[in-house]
Image (tube, rainbow, N blue to C red; front, side, top):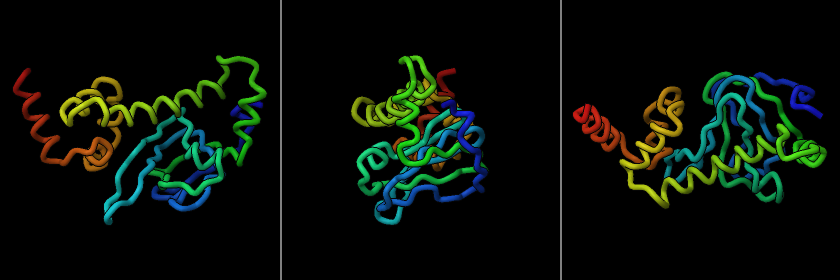
Length: 171
């Protein structure tokens, strides 16, 4: 099986693909567009991941264990995605004949993105988190609204403004 054999679906901007508290039964391979994963706490949306073209988006824990999702996944803009039904992705993964296969690469990328976000908070202060993203994932700063980036980094808009002002004085 190849990704190209999975049907394409067009989703409008703002479409909720996974709702917190529901079991994740799909994985989304993004052809065009953007998704975000977030949870709600005290009435605020807190971003935990963004997915772009070529990414696989899912709640892996819920997808594998059939436990309810702790977070939501929705489209940020109109998105065309290939939608893997429950276990379809892992059937493809198991059938892949080597570690260099597209299925293996997509799963590795998903796991690395999750680890990267977790490490941002374990290893870096707010200024270092911003600089890390600017260096290693500049697409976030280019394509995601600043308010959403602030939520992802756990930084207020004022803090990001101070960081940017300080950076501009260095050049």
